[in-house]
Image (cartoon, rainbow, N blue to C red; front, top):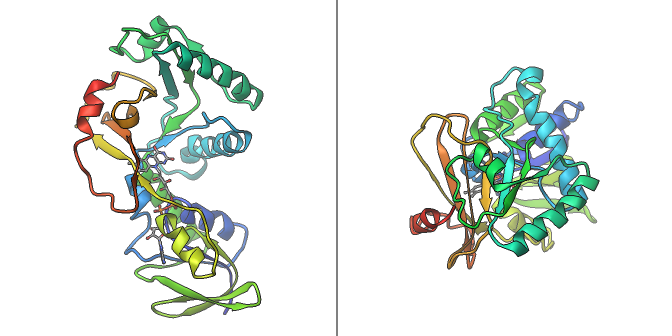
Length: 290
Ligand SMILES: Cc1cc2nc3c(=O)[nH]c(=O)nc-3n(C[C@H](O)[C@H](O)[C@H](O)COP(=O)(O)OP(=O)(O)OC[C@H]3O[C@@H](n4cnc5c(N)ncnc54)[C@H](O)[C@@H]3O)c2cc1C
């Protein structure tokens, strides 16, 4: 029995792909090495969902994603922890303020709802922000956040309902080909015929490509994140502090729908590879930031 589509990986990309393909009456099989859905990068994400990008492709795809997440509960019934809490990029250096305001012109032309707030206006939505040297901030009120765990679980159960099949604890190890077409996906447990394959293997996408002599430029690097106990809501948007510190390219944080403050850095130089054990050293960068 041939599948229309085999998806490698039941993560952030593979599960929604399975749902929407199954709903288009495609016969879908998802093959996943872990014991369940969303067990790798998906569950490490902090839940920010933004269309605040700089190019048309990303902005338009992400505006559509936001529309799906924002209306998910109404359309499908599941609480995914969605909040339209917005994204913000405060500027403390004149060159950052200028770059952000120049970028806003491009973002407006692509349909993004983004505006510039004065330091006083920003302090109203992020009370306690460091006002020392603050020049203002961008604010995109329609960006938001949701729980990566809840959305993935919802997507997974809807995909099952739509007829997608999942095989867990099973790893893709190779392919059979006829010319340049994949005819079978081979795993450590069996072989499955198919018409098309989606490589949604995340950190391992390059290894999957190599099985077909393709060099797919996916080079994972690590971010570091921490999370607090829940407290009463006290600020709105995701705050992205673009200032570099030795060891950190930027710092960002927000308060999720359960009241927990989640904070992250982008290590600089990057921590390359897939060993993503926590270092805890990053906490001192968080303490220095805005
Ligand atoms: C600390 C941190 C914070 C983040 N915050 C955000 C955020 O706020 N917003 C945001 O949008 N993104 C965020 N991300 C990024 C986000 O988590 C990833 O971009 C996303 O999860 C990648 O999805 P994926 O489907 O490509 O990979 P994954 O979710 O990792 O899925 C890939 C799946 O493929 C499976 N697989 C791999 N190889 C094989 C094989 N050979 N056979 C079978 N199965 C295989 C894996 O087991 C895995 O389950 C964050 C990431 C981190 C680490």
